Length: 118
Image (tube, rainbow, N blue to C red):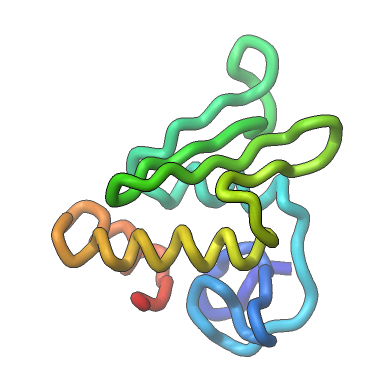
């Protein structure tokens, strides 16, 4: 169930879409989230399954000097920094918003995705 406003996978933070802040209920599968982030976040480093095929198994970002990583480990999504998934997304989006002030490419990507700047 994707967000009706920004079409991002459904991940609510305090009852609102973590991406665009529209009212939202329910949560999607984290595997869909990694595919979505790989397509939307500029400079995302993505690893897929065997011979680089299949779903995303590892994704990492370097945003304003801070590293973010999500990878599957034993059927569980492991995050760096190690916080709750929606909090991790909020941290990532906050850093991307900060970086968008200085980088036109990041700003264009964030706005095209329909995400709210923080």
